[in-house]
Amino acid sequence: MGAARLPGKPLLAETGKPLVVHTLEAASAARCAARVAVATDDPRIASAVRAAGGEAVMTSPDCRSGTDRVAEAARALPGEDLVLNVQGDEPEIAAADLDRLADAMEADPGIPMGTLACPLASEEEFRSPSVVKVVLDASGCALYFSRAPIPFPRDAGGAAPALRHVGVYAFRRAFLDGFASLPQTPLERTEMLEQLRALENGHRIRVVPADRAPPGIDTREDYEAFVRRRRER
Image 1 (cartoon, helix red, strand yellow):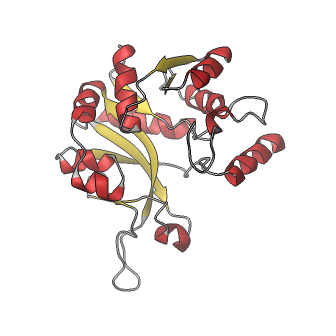
Image 2 (image 1 turned 90 degrees about the vertical axis):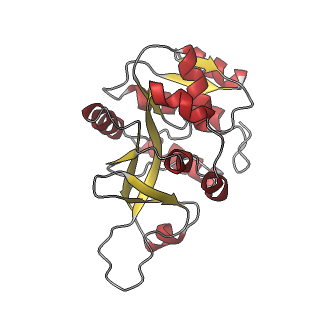
């Protein structure tokens, strides 16, 4: 609710329903979703979700990150071994990508955490600090995430592809609680990327190909473009 560039964005409802409800519905369309809940510290968001027939879990306003909030919510929702974290301002997240991520995690029980990535669309994205990049090892796990352009093309025609991180995470329930209790790490604080906390502590993150990066809602212009796309359907 306190987003600096678009205050109150979860409850913007020019499409006829709040933005957070669009995200709830998009996540619920995934085949893998046995249960979908909105984790929030704001009773207005919880009320809007419940009014739409969804489930909301109230969490502490002192959570350091989205992962910490998801870990707190997961403790109140015992059950499934795999927990997926979708940000509330991603109303166009693809259900197929969520299923692909869940399938990859189920296929390799030794991986504690997973996420998504897709090809970068432009040189501008590659250079932009607001677009997070990821480089992978030979097994498809993350080597590093950065806001800087990685891998750096020292010579023209480098073979390593540049990938854009898509900020959806999958966690083993047993891993999630311990991960959230770890102190923030130097690289995490430097880049302001919480997934680096896992890498700095020696945990592997599987990176699964996504079809595309969903257009998240960060500004008024982003939201107006989303409204237009909804009306054109």
